[in-house]
View: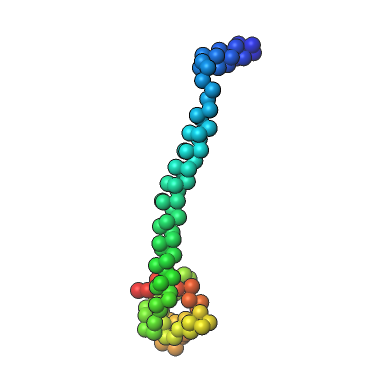
Length: 107
């Protein structure tokens, strides 16, 4: 057991008189760089997709073919912007009301 303590002491003594104060600064810089890369690769593209989806939802009109997040294809028959509801025709005699945010894409 005494051998390990001696080796550790010898290693710390071999580094000389450097204080090691720069390692804390390097750690902070690496954390900032890592966060920056994370932000650029994940957060910015998601914001761009959210902005495009919001614009698509705001521009929904009658006779637009849409796909809901539930996987239902249909044609918009009415848009109630005040309530945020869209009426979708999914069959000849079947109409469904969904919230505007439930529209995934326009076809």
